[in-house]
Length: 220
Ligand SMILES: CC(C)(COP(=O)(O)OP(=O)(O)OC[C@H]1O[C@@H](n2cnc3c(N)ncnc32)[C@H](O)[C@@H]1OP(=O)(O)O)[C@@H](O)C(=O)NCCC(=O)NCCS
Image (cartoon, rainbow, N blue to C red; front, side):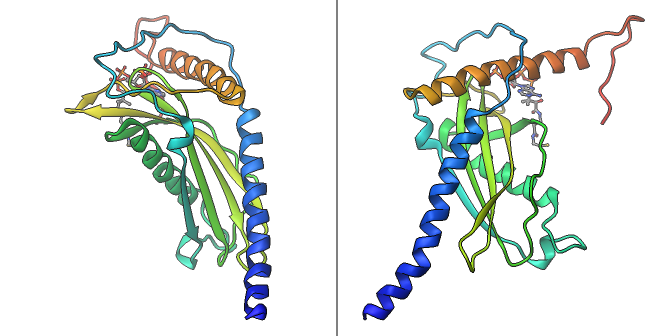
């Protein structure tokens, strides 16, 4: 019996350590989120427009675990970036929908850089949480790590911010307020507002009329 407990403990311990490292790395990633300088005004939704009371970021945390099969891999045996992106979008969409209590569509994904590959036979760990709520949109941070299930070792793969728009009756609908209390959550919210302004300024610039009066359509 002790042997069984010992085996279970020796298997669980590296996994527990990996989970703690994962959480620490996640917080560090969030803390180092990039900032952008532009600012644009935003009208706050009225109390009547808000679907329900404030929601805590911690309640939106969504985790997914995926196993990398040969069908997910490229010729080098690493998972395709597009596959990781699809899992990120899915994890973040579930997170946004839990937060907003309604269907949410992906409005945008900030630029991503893949740090380290994940091989066939390894595990992909995804964790998403809402970092900011605006009027009808919310920002979701997703952290992705690789895990070797035979050792419990984990490593950073990619992380990024995705924006979702809540929908009701086929049109954008107000999202709940984000109830931030921790200093880190407040800092993240502040940085998210700046990122939002930068996204909207980029969007505005892309659809602005050119000097000749023609509307500049962004390249696909
Ligand atoms: C995203 C979408 C709803 C925006 O529609 P729109 O007519 O521009 O609506 P609005 O101008 O009212 O914007 C709605 C919200 O989207 C946000 N938004 C729009 N484009 C954005 C972008 N590129 N990045 C981040 N946020 C964006 C706006 O800031 C606004 O948020 P707010 O209310 O919190 O301020 C619309 O472009 C759409 O449906 N796109 C397709 C979404 C989709 O199908 N995704 C799945 C992948 S194909």
